[in-house]
Image (cartoon, rainbow, N blue to C red):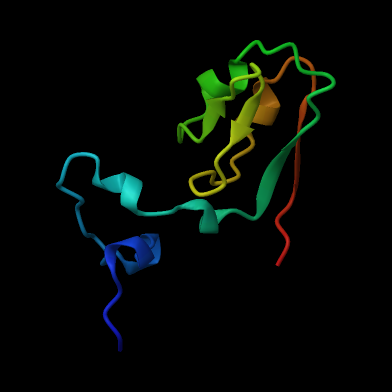
Length: 98
């Protein structure tokens, strides 16, 4: 088996029961592959309240320079909390393709 570089490592490469001990090292492991559904935004309904950002347990939502929010699919696990908390139904959870 070929050895992977750090940039190629994913969450599946961590040994079961393994503890990540280095500060900030969780950012190295993409967790988006866990998803079965993903959020889609309809910015025409968005009032830029930021509740999706506040409630996201994975910190995978960031505010863009125009004030709208974007999901980093590298980390989004598809939990749907952002869609549930959005008061204007901006976010819809859709099945992950593939």
